[in-house]
Amino acid sequence: MIDWTLEQDARLAYSYERFSQSKVFVFGKWCEQANERGIARPDDLSGACKYGSLFVAQVFGGCIRGHYQHQYNHIGGRIVDLSHDALDVGKMDNPYLHEPDYFAIPEKRAALNRCLPRVEAWVSEFIEGLESV
Image 1: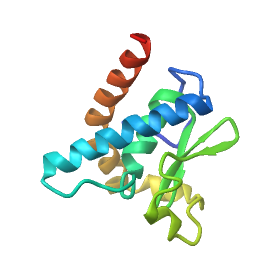
Image 2: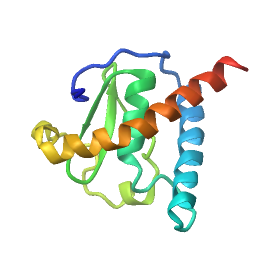
Image 3: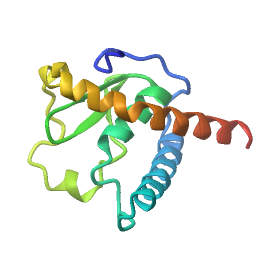
């Protein structure tokens, strides 16, 4: 079981351009997942922070931070959040609060690990897409 609160190695160097590409890519995958579940197409990445933070950690490294309402990434001293402009994040009083003990909860770790196979497939597809350009 990976401890996502520890620094992960980057597969790609972080840049604003790659952040934008990642955000578009993950939103497309979030929409596909909604379609698979038979629910309405999302307007933004609300509710996708587990997937987004795992994706960013695997692509750009760094670590995952957060609390019971939201999780995001910390890379090279900066907050990186694919969901930064999502409606649910905008409604939070302190979306970038970090409660390290939250990630020690076994159910939280299990929830992240359940998302991992899907995210790993997304990461592979994303990186392959960049390499083919």
